[in-house]
Length: 422
Image (cartoon, rainbow, N blue to C red):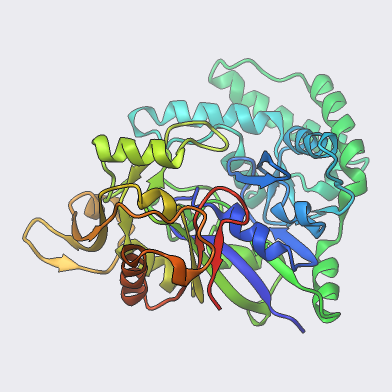
């Protein structure tokens, strides 16, 4: 039985997971998206065109069976738009499969998301307002509607029950209530269109593994946005770490092989929350522009800063990374001077290399940096021995700190701009 490769973000998301998934999916029979919803996105360059994928696994481009796992929450309207975008570009979606256990995002989830964020007042967490959190909440409260319910005759009754309850709450807050008949008509049409894609993905995945097929799993968002292990409450609504891969796909621990932690040669964050190495200056602005750091989903400008090895070590511990894949080495090389965070200093001058998700404690720390020479050209290089000395020194410092090999290195935007170290 073959082992499963897993791709996970190490920090706050937007690390460039799509590029690594795209590479690994080239040899995969099945590519599985395991968690999150259309609050996340991968940008894939395929056939000279850019595709921003929010729900469909990146493996669809390589001809692999693309599975939307049970841990994903699915906005039917968004998914159908993605399917159309791919089909219009000549990319077949006949290999797309949706878990019958995946939960459905409905209009009242989006309305509730807006309401909750408004009620937080000054304590906003920066939600994308796409209904992700409320859908997971309904799932845990056992009010959720799964894909298997969505495509069945009982959908109309489940929808009526949920909408009646939600509309009572909207009434209390003087929010316009939703029209049941209108929502039922619209979403019944979506259900009919998606029905051919829905199946038992548990059996699909495990039968494939038992028959020697290769499976790749892709995580959404990243480690420091995990609902348990991230910078709570400034996190997403699902498990974005290795545990979420298992729960969101039906895999077990013995199925897992290599676990790739994806990083950039710098760091970034979208939304609120602590970010120790953030650069609120011209250098941060320069990194943003050089790296085109604007959200795939939201288009929001990302907060940018230096790479944080304390946080990376934490991500290694949580996920058991066997490999690190670094993107944007070409971008960071354009700076004259580069820094790496190798410790956190508290108000008394004590230094630690242990990460904490306690936001009050994090905000009291200041970063301890090592400085490296930049001003090197790594653009388009595809062999490690061809990299400039300064780039190799930077990579070695990362490896020495976290004790994990940087086995893949992105050196440009094209899918071929990738160094793979065996």
